[in-house]
Image 1 (cartoon, rainbow over the protein chains, first blue to last red):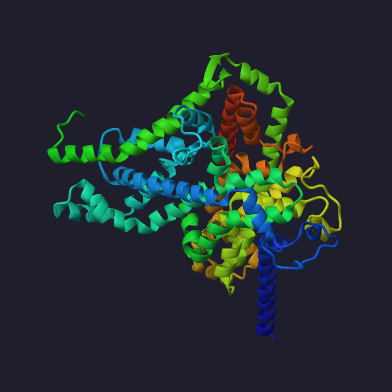
Image 2 (cartoon, chains in turn cyan, orange):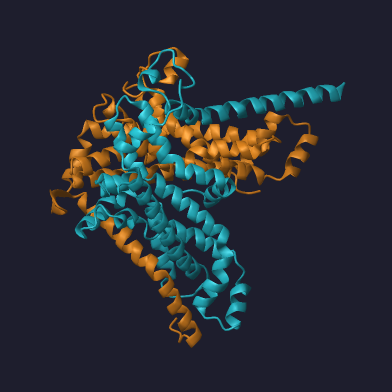
Length: 279
Length: 295
């Protein structure tokens, strides 16, 4: 009797769990599905009441219109370069500094690390006006360099990789040092290769953040040909106020690269971004 | 404390300086100096082309006397009230569901996490369509005619829904990691005592996960205080509800880069940072009452 009621309550718990998980999953996926379905409808069909669920035809016209009104080739290229350079800078400089802060003794270390902490705790908007003025003064507005500029160094990356290097036992470095490596060789031949998981996490985190950033690209690159996917897409809402099929097609084109990467590297993305603890 | 360094120690010190140099130079040029400049600019009038004239606290006087500014401050606080408690509670629920023995756990995790990798600009565009007053699918499902984005009373709510939808999976993954760290033996000992599931949640799960819960809340709060991109995408200059949905950071953007009043914009951003600091301090003070750190 007892086992029977236990089993029943177990089954009920299970059903309730799945019910809410599936409901949640539907809510999460629905906007994407609706975006894809709408992107193949004509404007009159998208405005039909009651709405059609599946488009009457599968067509690429809306994508053609989106590409005709936004220079997507440029946007992809700019976004790829921006993300690439930001990731390279973040990984290279943060690894170096993270290693030094974790493993080396030098005067001024605490004060210098204090600068890292101060930057981390301030929102990036507080730097934007002066950063923009620097870029403008250098005559570098509307360039790839301008897009990369605030991401040349990453305080968060330094903080994060310092923790990784601190978790590597001292003996590893000492052994390399006794083998005749100098500090630089110890760093890049022995220590750096041990941090690949963290470097991957930092790479993903930096890339996702840079990809989605909107305010900086809008401020610094006003030329449509020099925009990123995010800032370029945002100009589309002024062009097509009621043509939602084209807006959906544009949104798909803008989010596609990162979503594809995400679906390929799901585990690395989830664990990488969650592992960095966010910013 | 003046000690002669051995040659090896000296070399180590030099390497240390060389290796932190790019980062430190970068941070000073890109962040520390701009921070000082923003602080100074908040006491200046922008004359154009990056030239400033010192005018004392005039920007702050203007700001505190401006109804639009106070509205934006309230909107930001209101947005936090709408997103943080609900968002974190939903994230905890999802984490608890995922922590049970379920099939396709990885699949669910992937789905809930998906909005995070989508650019907010694209996400907001999709939701504009869902919220559309005439033809939006949400009104069709509800059988209503709510002007979600242009009605002053629902505009912020609409942005808050998108924000929670975007971030809930990420928060859930962080909380799930916290839940998985709770030792199973705690539950076993407890269930021998005959405690029910609900009591178990309040006596074991909640206290044990409270440090993670706290850090997720702080993070979500900071992000919500800085909300900008979703509002930029969902509001247009012609939106009648613009003043009712604009956040401090959106007002900062409009003042500094659309109106070009960079002194005033700097004052807004300084105020926002002060507000973030204040709210964070209150949270840290309040955590003593509910966060358990001892195991």
